[in-house]
Image (cartoon, rainbow, N blue to C red; front, side, top):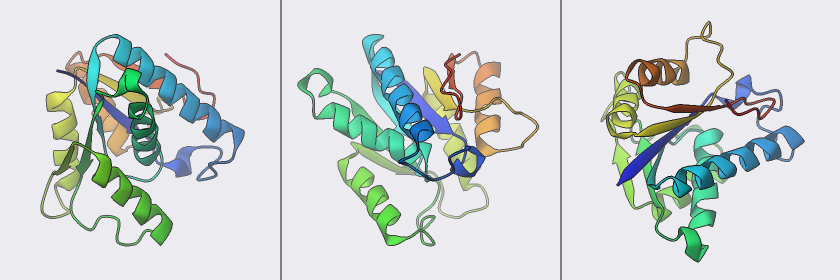
Length: 172
């Protein structure tokens, strides 16, 4: 079964930050859904997401909603958590959103038991299983981040990457 991994920069890098009612956030969510549909039409059935605030949570929610439609009922969602308890400092609302995703995923993977190597192992999980990557990323490699490392490695491994700019919604 073909697999697509979804990664995205932290909402602090977006012009709209965490404001999900902002038109930029709404546009970004529409672009994500459009790309999920496009990947589905190309034979992708399994989608891998992380478990961070922002793109990971939004992607999971969009995919679960899509799966309610009989046309996309065979979507498989895999949530890859870096380590148990990584969300302990989140507010209750966002903890509940992550719990919802975990409850509705086909598979929940904990990439590591402790924090020091957890994000590296999460990245490896994505890269070792993805046939393609959707990256919400401004392509600013001068800012070292989890996403820039995953995207760089995907490009080196010749994994096709679809970029969605977080502020403009432009697809490249």
